[in-house]
Each structure stands twice: as structure tokens, then as C-alpha cells.
Length: 111
Length: 113
Image (cartoon, rainbow over all chains, first blue to last red; front, side):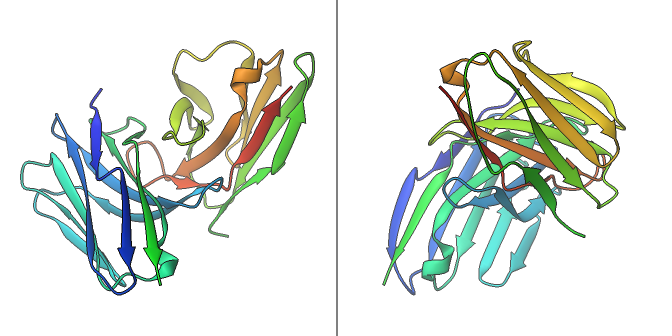
């Protein structure tokens, strides 16, 4: 199965600043999923990307999947304290297989 | 109803106890999953049910026994657990294994003494 590398491992940004989190796979992915998790809680689904070059946005969060379907980025514009948490990318190599996850990126937004 | 519910929220058990974790969804999803998450680690897949049949078992020890009584319910029966099994257990569901992003429940925090 593929391994997903997320970077950075952790991030501290000042409120109002933009930030980007990356997720890279050694293999071509069938689908790439972004989730957010507060410590000790469940995962909140953010976005799913399946087509090479696809880009989706929701509120101030934009996710992109590259043409080769091996790298994705999550961009937050004008960050707010509510954006704090752990961001996880998940992926499946083949249709019908359950997700494997990257190690996560811990985001702290300071006032 | 657009959420996955899990009970109990917290569970403390001894190594000789038998307990069960429950997961429920009413979104008409036909794939359901159990994940285990240790502190500061990503979730790790344990089991996948597709149309109420076990389709993936990721070499999980037999002290964990999954059950899918119907399309809305998923149980995880626990017996003779070890302290290292203490973790957050997450249930998820999706339309089926090939459609839709899995939606996760809030998890059950399990402590084995």
C-alpha cells in the first residue's frame, strides 16, 4: 500500500495569515481525502479529490490534487483560531479499498 | 440524519472483562469501518464491512471481534484485552466501498487496566 507523507508536521501561524499543508504519495492515488481532527475527537470530513488537476474550495479552505495524482495541498486563507487542529490526508490506491492516512499536521493559530 | 454515532464515549475495562463498542448510522451507507487511533498517531484500519459482510480484516488479534447485525449497526466486541489496546476507536461509514468519502463518528476512548 502507499505511504503518505505530510508536511509540515506542525505549524504555528498568526491569525489572519495564510498557510499550506502538503501530502505526497509515492504511488498514483485513486482518491485523496482531507480531514480535520480535534484532539480525542472524531475526524471531520473536509474535501475529496479524485481527478488529476482537481481543485475544491469550501469557505477559506482550498484543496488541490496534482495532475499525476500523487500530491495534494491544503491551503487556508486568512487563518482563524477555529482552524486549529490536526489535518490528516487519507488516500486509497484502488477503488474499493479503505483509506490509509498520513501522520497529520498539527495547526495552532495564535491571536 | 447525517452523522455516525458511537457509544459509549468512554470505556474503562479490566483485562478479563468483556465489553462491546457500538456504532450506528442512518445515512443508508453500505460500507462501515473500524479504525484504531493511538495518541499522536493517524487512524489505523482494523475492519471493513461491505453490505453487512466482512471484507477486510487487517490482521487484527482475535480478542477484537466485529459484528454487523444490520446495515445501520456495527459492533466491536472486546475480550481479554491488553493495556496496549488502550486507544481511541473510530467508526466510519460510506455509501459503499467505491463511493463517497467515509464519515467518522466521535470515537470511543478505551482504557484497559
